[in-house]
Image 1 (cartoon, one colour):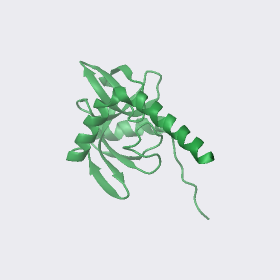
Image 2 (cartoon, rainbow, N blue to C red; image 1 turned 90 degrees about the vertical axis):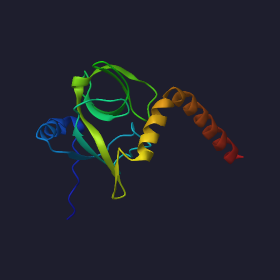
Image 3 (cartoon, one colour; image 1 turned 180 degrees about the vertical axis):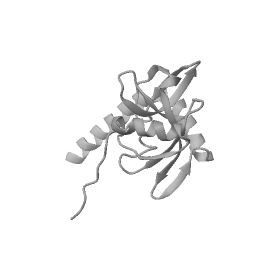
Image 4 (spheres, rainbow, N blue to C red; image 1 turned 30 degrees about the horizontal axis):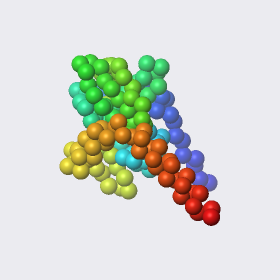
Length: 157
């Protein structure tokens, strides 16, 4: 008999993650959702989270929204104790997130059994370009959507 894989929501396990990070341990989680695509892939990649002592621009952090929901997104801007955050696959910024809401930050991610540090040169370049191109995400999405529709139309002929 095969056992069913249990996938608790981040909201259910967040208190355990916080306790582990407070105890000085790192936590490994499987990514769920598409908000951090293309960097992180749903149910494929794993992330290593460490305690977030200081939140910096470009960090990918696990934080708690004011509505109580836990989310894993990138910091676009730091204004004192307030953060501007968005997922890599999103076009809307979340403003006014307190640094106190951050539980931990990604220090590495695993894809196809290969561990990738957030300190590698290619990751640093990727994160900076992705933040820099944030204002272009919505127009690029519209162009790509229009091209997909055109392609579908042409394939029907």
